[in-house]
Length: 131
Image 1: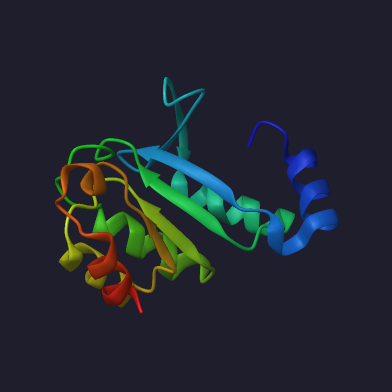
Image 2: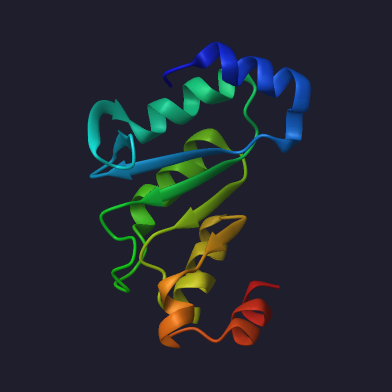
């Protein structure tokens, strides 16, 4: 976003090894440690990154991160459906059922943080559900 030339060069040199993380609040990208809001939609950001050669993304709904509520399924599905590339979802995941829904939406993987610490998700059960 801020240095598209760097992203393009990294993708050219390292191809599949590059994963771009998009952090969004209310569908809009936030930068600088989530402190700076932008007017750029997460989907538009992803599409511009695809044009630079990015082939995989991490998508975090930062308004849900650490809340143990639920992922933003609608925004995640929109991203998966629009770009058609692997997405790793993060933010609000707090149950095995959330993982199952994300898998049904076409998400490649999930980042689970607080739910592991609190015991809301058992890692062994999560791995079984994801396979």
